[in-house]
Image (cartoon, rainbow, N blue to C red; front, side, top):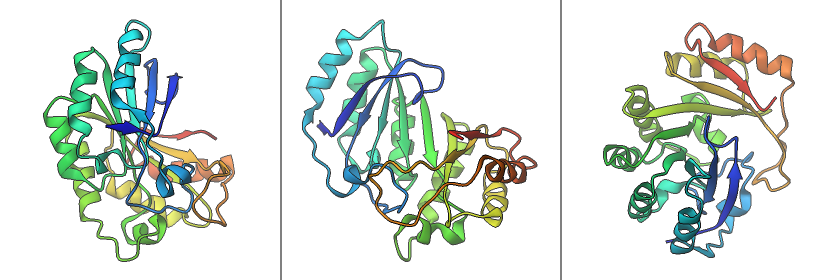
Length: 228
């Protein structure tokens, strides 16, 4: 198994843990605001998984966890065997996912290979296809992943990157009803990385973001802002 990159130390990607982040290329979505466009559109897997496992062996006692992100990691059928080796080294595992592969998510969680899942909720269901750049997208798999995480089978968070002109107050009224009772929900500020898939995206102000958060609070008391 090959990876597209590694961040050898992060205090942000895995809440409460000292971790490294592993990047897997490729994604089934084409969100115009994606900040890892090169990973999605032109992945170059150059780092061998065995090399990363050797790195992790040497970092035992320094790192607590491993974050696996993308792209969309669940596109990779060989992810489970790799995570088994990571777990055997004693690491906690966090997975970032867009939720479009619920069966694979259940499989990894059921095998005890995940400690924490961060799922991106892109928008309210009627606006999903337009937000992710996939015409006619069937939201059923995403809805299934949300139900699975809300069941508490594995620790989790939901998060939405809030972007002009894709989101508005109606977006968050609908998302809040959908994710009602979620343990954690973050409204993330959009940042132009200079490596976006689309054009015309911009950030809301902190006051605007707070107004969106207030709309979520009756259904999701844990709703919080991140990166603003």
